[in-house]
View 1 (cartoon, helix red, strand yellow):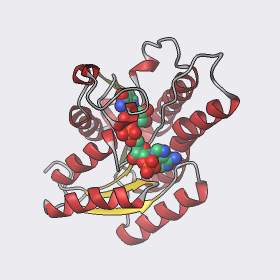
View 2 (cartoon, helix red, strand yellow; view 1 turned 45 degrees about the vertical axis):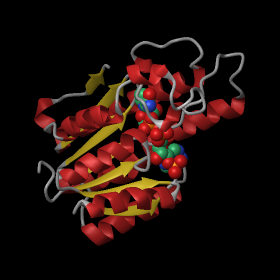
View 3 (cartoon, rainbow, N blue to C red; view 1 turned 90 degrees about the horizontal axis):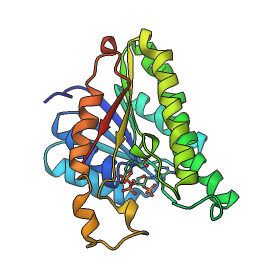
Length: 235
Ligand SMILES: NC(=O)c1ccc[n+]([C@@H]2O[C@H](COP(=O)([O-])OP(=O)(O)OC[C@H]3O[C@@H](n4cnc5c(N)ncnc54)[C@H](OP(=O)(O)O)[C@@H]3O)[C@@H](O)[C@H]2O)c1
Protein backbone atom coordinates (compact mmCIF):
# COMPACT_ATOMS: atom_id res chain seq x y z
CA UNK A 1 0.00 0.00 0.00
CA UNK A 2 2.43 2.64 -1.24
CA UNK A 3 -0.18 5.39 -1.69
CA UNK A 4 -2.03 5.16 1.62
CA UNK A 5 -3.58 8.54 2.58
CA UNK A 6 -2.70 10.06 -0.80
CA UNK A 7 -5.18 11.79 -3.10
CA UNK A 8 -4.38 11.26 -6.79
CA UNK A 9 -6.15 13.14 -9.59
CA UNK A 10 -5.94 11.34 -12.94
CA UNK A 11 -7.04 12.75 -16.30
CA UNK A 12 -8.14 10.31 -18.98
CA UNK A 13 -9.03 7.87 -16.20
CA UNK A 14 -11.85 6.15 -18.10
CA UNK A 15 -9.68 4.33 -20.64
CA UNK A 16 -6.29 2.84 -21.48
CA UNK A 17 -3.25 4.01 -19.53
CA UNK A 18 -5.24 6.40 -17.30
CA UNK A 19 -7.73 3.70 -16.36
CA UNK A 20 -5.05 1.11 -15.50
CA UNK A 21 -3.20 3.76 -13.49
CA UNK A 22 -6.38 4.52 -11.56
CA UNK A 23 -6.98 0.83 -10.78
CA UNK A 24 -3.36 0.36 -9.63
CA UNK A 25 -3.28 3.55 -7.53
CA UNK A 26 -6.52 2.49 -5.82
CA UNK A 27 -4.98 -0.93 -5.05
CA UNK A 28 -2.05 0.96 -3.49
CA UNK A 29 -4.46 2.74 -1.13
CA UNK A 30 -4.92 6.14 -2.81
CA UNK A 31 -8.18 8.03 -3.02
CA UNK A 32 -8.38 8.26 -6.80
CA UNK A 33 -10.10 11.24 -8.40
CA UNK A 34 -11.15 9.99 -11.82
CA UNK A 35 -11.61 12.56 -14.56
CA UNK A 36 -12.47 12.49 -18.29
CA UNK A 37 -15.38 13.88 -20.31
CA UNK A 38 -17.71 10.85 -20.34
CA UNK A 39 -19.04 10.42 -16.79
CA UNK A 40 -20.72 7.03 -17.47
CA UNK A 41 -17.39 5.43 -18.39
CA UNK A 42 -15.77 6.97 -15.30
CA UNK A 43 -18.52 5.55 -13.10
CA UNK A 44 -17.73 2.05 -14.45
CA UNK A 45 -14.10 2.47 -13.30
CA UNK A 46 -15.26 3.96 -9.99
CA UNK A 47 -17.54 0.96 -9.39
CA UNK A 48 -14.74 -1.48 -10.22
CA UNK A 49 -12.49 0.27 -7.68
CA UNK A 50 -15.19 0.36 -4.99
CA UNK A 51 -16.08 -3.31 -5.58
CA UNK A 52 -12.44 -4.06 -4.70
CA UNK A 53 -12.68 -1.95 -1.51
CA UNK A 54 -10.80 0.99 -3.04
CA UNK A 55 -11.60 4.69 -2.81
CA UNK A 56 -12.61 6.69 -5.88
CA UNK A 57 -14.73 9.61 -7.01
CA UNK A 58 -15.57 10.73 -10.55
CA UNK A 59 -15.85 14.11 -12.21
CA UNK A 60 -16.63 14.98 -15.80
CA UNK A 61 -13.82 17.38 -16.69
CA UNK A 62 -12.77 18.46 -20.17
CA UNK A 63 -9.12 19.46 -19.80
CA UNK A 64 -9.48 21.98 -22.64
CA UNK A 65 -12.15 23.89 -20.66
CA UNK A 66 -10.36 26.04 -18.06
CA UNK A 67 -13.56 26.78 -16.12
CA UNK A 68 -14.25 23.06 -15.73
CA UNK A 69 -10.67 22.37 -14.62
CA UNK A 70 -10.85 25.18 -12.04
CA UNK A 71 -14.26 24.07 -10.76
CA UNK A 72 -13.36 20.38 -10.40
CA UNK A 73 -9.99 21.01 -8.73
CA UNK A 74 -11.58 23.53 -6.33
CA UNK A 75 -14.23 20.95 -5.43
CA UNK A 76 -11.60 18.25 -4.82
CA UNK A 77 -9.74 20.60 -2.47
CA UNK A 78 -12.97 21.56 -0.70
CA UNK A 79 -13.84 17.88 -0.14
CA UNK A 80 -10.40 16.35 0.50
CA UNK A 81 -8.09 19.21 1.41
CA UNK A 82 -5.17 18.18 -0.80
CA UNK A 83 -3.96 16.75 -4.10
CA UNK A 84 -0.78 14.71 -3.66
CA UNK A 85 -0.48 13.34 -7.19
CA UNK A 86 -1.57 14.62 -10.60
CA UNK A 87 -1.34 12.25 -13.58
CA UNK A 88 -1.95 13.82 -16.99
CA UNK A 89 -2.98 10.90 -19.17
CA UNK A 90 -5.83 12.41 -21.23
CA UNK A 91 -4.89 12.76 -24.87
CA UNK A 92 -5.95 12.16 -28.45
CA UNK A 93 -4.21 10.92 -31.58
CA UNK A 94 -4.80 11.82 -35.21
CA UNK A 95 -1.95 10.63 -37.36
CA UNK A 96 -1.35 12.46 -40.64
CA UNK A 97 1.41 13.88 -42.83
CA UNK A 98 1.99 17.60 -43.34
CA UNK A 99 -0.10 17.48 -46.55
CA UNK A 100 -3.01 15.79 -44.81
CA UNK A 101 -3.03 17.70 -41.52
CA UNK A 102 -5.79 20.31 -41.55
CA UNK A 103 -5.44 23.54 -39.59
CA UNK A 104 -8.34 22.37 -37.41
CA UNK A 105 -6.72 19.00 -36.64
CA UNK A 106 -3.45 20.68 -35.74
CA UNK A 107 -5.11 23.17 -33.39
CA UNK A 108 -7.23 20.44 -31.82
CA UNK A 109 -4.28 18.20 -30.97
CA UNK A 110 -2.27 21.06 -29.50
CA UNK A 111 -5.31 22.04 -27.44
CA UNK A 112 -5.90 18.50 -26.10
CA UNK A 113 -2.34 17.22 -25.68
CA UNK A 114 -0.43 20.36 -24.72
CA UNK A 115 -2.80 23.08 -23.50
CA UNK A 116 -4.91 20.54 -21.60
CA UNK A 117 -1.89 19.47 -19.52
CA UNK A 118 -0.94 23.10 -18.96
CA UNK A 119 -4.46 23.81 -17.65
CA UNK A 120 -4.40 21.02 -15.04
CA UNK A 121 -0.82 21.80 -13.93
CA UNK A 122 -1.60 25.53 -13.72
CA UNK A 123 -4.45 24.84 -11.26
CA UNK A 124 -2.68 22.10 -9.27
CA UNK A 125 0.82 23.59 -8.87
CA UNK A 126 -0.22 26.37 -6.41
CA UNK A 127 -1.94 23.73 -4.25
CA UNK A 128 1.19 21.55 -4.21
CA UNK A 129 3.44 24.57 -3.57
CA UNK A 130 1.28 25.41 -0.54
CA UNK A 131 1.51 21.77 0.62
CA UNK A 132 5.29 21.87 -0.03
CA UNK A 133 4.87 18.44 -1.62
CA UNK A 134 3.44 16.74 -4.66
CA UNK A 135 4.12 14.50 -7.63
CA UNK A 136 3.12 15.34 -11.19
CA UNK A 137 3.38 12.69 -13.90
CA UNK A 138 2.86 13.62 -17.55
CA UNK A 139 2.27 10.85 -20.08
CA UNK A 140 4.11 11.87 -23.25
CA UNK A 141 5.05 9.32 -25.97
CA UNK A 142 8.09 7.61 -27.48
CA UNK A 143 7.25 9.56 -30.66
CA UNK A 144 9.10 12.44 -28.99
CA UNK A 145 12.23 10.27 -28.75
CA UNK A 146 11.96 8.86 -32.29
CA UNK A 147 9.47 10.53 -34.62
CA UNK A 148 8.15 8.56 -37.58
CA UNK A 149 6.60 10.08 -40.69
CA UNK A 150 2.89 10.91 -40.69
CA UNK A 151 2.74 12.16 -37.12
CA UNK A 152 2.82 15.95 -37.66
CA UNK A 153 0.22 17.36 -35.26
CA UNK A 154 0.58 14.56 -32.70
CA UNK A 155 4.38 14.87 -32.55
CA UNK A 156 4.24 18.67 -32.36
CA UNK A 157 1.68 18.61 -29.53
CA UNK A 158 3.61 15.94 -27.61
CA UNK A 159 6.98 17.69 -28.03
CA UNK A 160 5.23 20.72 -26.58
CA UNK A 161 3.88 18.67 -23.68
CA UNK A 162 7.40 17.28 -23.06
CA UNK A 163 8.81 20.81 -23.01
CA UNK A 164 6.09 21.86 -20.60
CA UNK A 165 6.90 18.91 -18.32
CA UNK A 166 10.65 19.64 -18.33
CA UNK A 167 10.16 23.37 -17.70
CA UNK A 168 7.73 22.78 -14.83
CA UNK A 169 10.17 20.19 -13.41
CA UNK A 170 12.80 22.94 -13.17
CA UNK A 171 10.35 25.46 -11.68
CA UNK A 172 9.07 23.14 -8.95
CA UNK A 173 12.02 20.93 -8.01
CA UNK A 174 13.13 23.25 -5.18
CA UNK A 175 9.59 23.50 -3.85
CA UNK A 176 9.18 19.86 -2.83
CA UNK A 177 7.39 18.85 -6.02
CA UNK A 178 8.57 16.15 -8.42
CA UNK A 179 7.55 16.40 -12.09
CA UNK A 180 8.27 13.35 -14.26
CA UNK A 181 7.56 12.78 -17.95
CA UNK A 182 6.79 9.16 -18.88
CA UNK A 183 7.48 8.17 -22.51
CA UNK A 184 5.63 4.95 -23.40
CA UNK A 185 6.06 3.15 -26.72
CA UNK A 186 2.92 1.97 -28.52
CA UNK A 187 0.49 0.64 -25.95
CA UNK A 188 -2.54 -1.54 -26.63
CA UNK A 189 -5.42 0.80 -25.77
CA UNK A 190 -8.59 2.08 -27.49
CA UNK A 191 -6.59 5.07 -28.81
CA UNK A 192 -5.56 2.77 -31.74
CA UNK A 193 -9.13 1.68 -32.58
CA UNK A 194 -9.53 4.15 -35.51
CA UNK A 195 -6.33 2.74 -37.10
CA UNK A 196 -6.51 -1.02 -36.46
CA UNK A 197 -9.04 -3.73 -35.61
CA UNK A 198 -9.26 -4.97 -32.02
CA UNK A 199 -7.76 -8.36 -33.01
CA UNK A 200 -4.93 -7.01 -35.21
CA UNK A 201 -1.82 -9.14 -34.43
CA UNK A 202 0.24 -5.91 -34.19
CA UNK A 203 -1.49 -5.28 -30.88
CA UNK A 204 0.25 -8.27 -29.30
CA UNK A 205 3.61 -6.57 -29.88
CA UNK A 206 2.54 -3.42 -28.06
CA UNK A 207 2.99 -2.62 -24.38
CA UNK A 208 0.12 -3.52 -22.10
CA UNK A 209 -1.45 -0.49 -20.36
CA UNK A 210 -1.06 -2.32 -17.02
CA UNK A 211 2.72 -2.33 -17.54
CA UNK A 212 2.76 1.41 -18.32
CA UNK A 213 0.65 1.99 -15.19
CA UNK A 214 3.38 0.29 -13.11
CA UNK A 215 5.91 2.80 -14.45
CA UNK A 216 3.50 5.67 -13.76
CA UNK A 217 3.33 4.43 -10.16
CA UNK A 218 7.14 4.40 -9.98
CA UNK A 219 7.18 7.94 -11.39
CA UNK A 220 4.61 9.11 -8.83
CA UNK A 221 6.77 7.79 -5.99
CA UNK A 222 9.99 9.54 -7.04
CA UNK A 223 11.08 12.01 -4.34
CA UNK A 224 11.95 15.52 -5.52
CA UNK A 225 15.56 15.20 -4.21
CA UNK A 226 16.22 12.51 -6.85
CA UNK A 227 15.66 15.12 -9.57
CA UNK A 228 14.37 12.53 -12.10
CA UNK A 229 12.90 14.22 -15.16
CA UNK A 230 11.82 11.30 -17.35
CA UNK A 231 11.19 7.56 -17.60
CA UNK A 232 11.09 5.75 -20.96
CA UNK A 233 8.93 2.61 -21.29
CA UNK A 234 9.90 0.18 -24.06
CA UNK A 235 7.97 -2.97 -25.01
N1 LIG B 1 -1.68 4.04 -26.48
C1 LIG B 1 -0.47 4.37 -26.93
O1 LIG B 1 0.10 3.72 -27.84
C2 LIG B 1 0.26 5.52 -26.31
C3 LIG B 1 1.66 5.54 -26.42
C4 LIG B 1 2.35 6.62 -25.88
C5 LIG B 1 1.66 7.62 -25.25
N2 LIG B 1 0.30 7.59 -25.17
C6 LIG B 1 -0.36 8.70 -24.49
O2 LIG B 1 -0.99 8.18 -23.34
C7 LIG B 1 -2.13 8.94 -23.01
C8 LIG B 1 -3.32 8.01 -22.81
O3 LIG B 1 -3.54 7.32 -24.02
P1 LIG B 1 -4.42 5.99 -24.09
O4 LIG B 1 -3.81 5.15 -25.11
O5 LIG B 1 -4.66 5.47 -22.72
O6 LIG B 1 -5.77 6.62 -24.72
P2 LIG B 1 -7.31 6.20 -24.59
O7 LIG B 1 -7.45 4.79 -24.18
O8 LIG B 1 -7.94 6.64 -25.86
O9 LIG B 1 -7.82 7.14 -23.40
C9 LIG B 1 -7.85 8.52 -23.54
C10 LIG B 1 -8.52 9.12 -22.33
O10 LIG B 1 -8.45 10.55 -22.41
C11 LIG B 1 -9.75 11.09 -22.17
N3 LIG B 1 -9.83 12.37 -22.88
C12 LIG B 1 -9.65 12.61 -24.19
N4 LIG B 1 -9.82 13.91 -24.45
C13 LIG B 1 -10.08 14.52 -23.25
C14 LIG B 1 -10.36 15.86 -22.84
N5 LIG B 1 -10.42 16.88 -23.73
N6 LIG B 1 -10.59 16.11 -21.54
C15 LIG B 1 -10.54 15.12 -20.65
N7 LIG B 1 -10.30 13.83 -20.96
C16 LIG B 1 -10.08 13.55 -22.26
C17 LIG B 1 -10.71 10.01 -22.69
O11 LIG B 1 -12.01 10.08 -22.10
P3 LIG B 1 -13.19 10.99 -22.71
O12 LIG B 1 -13.18 10.75 -24.20
O13 LIG B 1 -14.44 10.52 -22.03
O14 LIG B 1 -12.86 12.39 -22.34
C18 LIG B 1 -9.99 8.77 -22.19
O15 LIG B 1 -10.26 8.57 -20.82
C19 LIG B 1 -2.32 9.95 -24.15
O16 LIG B 1 -1.79 11.19 -23.72
C20 LIG B 1 -1.46 9.37 -25.28
O17 LIG B 1 -0.95 10.38 -26.12
C21 LIG B 1 -0.41 6.55 -25.67
